[in-house]
Image (cartoon, rainbow, N blue to C red; front, side, top):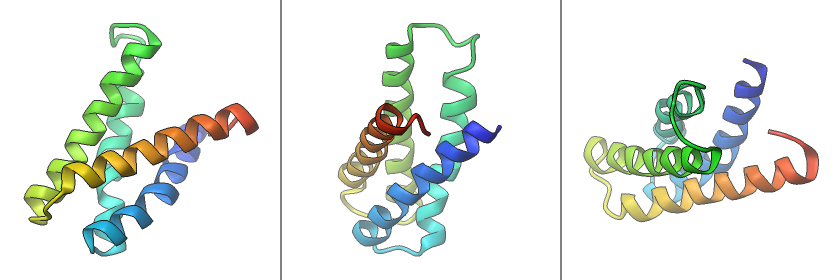
Amino acid sequence: MGAWLQAFLFTQIVEVPIYMRSMRCSAWAAFGASAITHPIVWFGFFHPAFPGSYAAKIVAAELFAWLAEAAYFRFAFKRKRAWLWSLCANGASFSLGMLSRRLFGVP
């Protein structure tokens, strides 16, 4: 659970400012996007029962996070270009997370 919390906080630190600026939303609305998707990605897609290689799980999980967060902003908050900004936010948190893991071993 500690590893998930570390990854969750890392994701929020990266994504919340991107969403606040691009979606012009509150910190709570920005926080809500990955608060919905992150547990599903972490505990669902990477559960041992979920089929596929590690690479396939990453692709499936990131596609899910991107599309679910985009839908959250597009339909719940009527934000235009939610697909683009969700791609940017998720791309940033994924890339920085992989870089941080490579350099520092976390998240």
